[in-house]
Length: 171
Image (cartoon, rainbow, N blue to C red; front, side):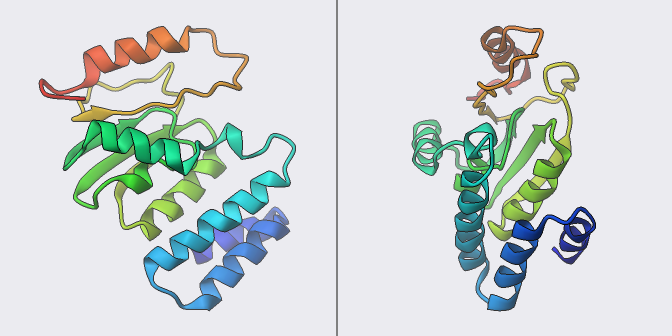
């Protein structure tokens, strides 16, 4: 967290710095830090031009998908993780692998998932063009709807990904 705040200071991201400084000084339990972080992220993105919708989905939607999938354990992959909203709904025994093309969002998501005590591996990657061979117990995806420059059909991409990268009993 301290390294991330130092990096934000270099780029003069004052709103983010203030939010993290307040959170760090509060000395709360991890789940309370997560609640404050989610509040701060909603505040920060509600004041941006593009808004939070580019990077996240409503918590209620993430909870609904988690309930439908009923994931108890195993490896879960999200090729368009954004702020990692879905990952925060997973049981702590799961391993979460998430990719996003936005490097800053990946750094932020890594902090958020650590506060949520989720075992995670987040990378800045273009999942549309660089999928690895690993298979997952579950793949969840909320494709980026606001992206206009993607040169593939995201629906077809996700269906193919689910077919080829889930384990035998994958969801």
